Length: 259
Image (cartoon, rainbow, N blue to C red; front, side, top):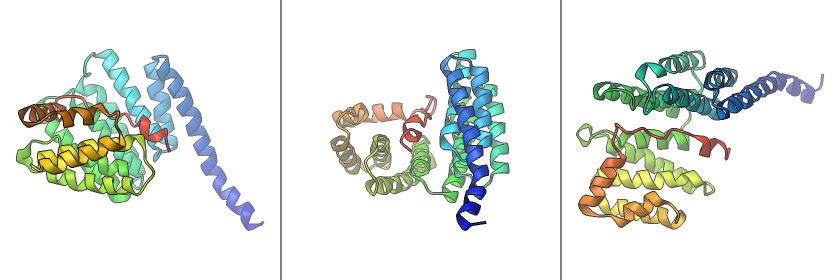
């Protein structure tokens, strides 16, 4: 048997698994589009199981759970609505401990649950989410991993002293995107890194990075709003943005569609 043929045969199971996952994903997306949430959740969960490190599949599975939950219990859902999803990811990372994206989405599953919980439970879940983000970064330090953990630190009150950790992560994500082609989602780092500088009392650096971001993304309303405010108005605005009681958008569609 030739070397080329043996390589192709070895790759065949991987290609078959990827094909199955893609088929499950497409059917899940169709169900989600028609608001058949039960089938969407089931099919997208199967897609994740077939390809555990696939960012797209896990992200859309979470979105299906979230939409199903809010449809059943309007506004933010109930904490118990997210328990099956969290248990699923807990088993997924146990079975696939080297899957960076599995850990990333495991952390996001806790973030998705936070808005439905009470303040004490929110702190516990936020800390658990950070643990999963850290594991993801340890396995593979990606832009999305560093941005996510860095941005998450900013939601903690100043008394916890975590904003500096957030700035460190966001600066690494910023360096990554500066070395990469411009992507639409890179605007997020300009916004959050400026917020981190603001939260660590470096207003001049915050204004500078927001201005740099506005030059790259002139249509960003978030950057326009920050640059148009100052003093107490700016403080009120950012504190409102970083209110841990508000739901955080964890939809990764903009990211996985460009990969």
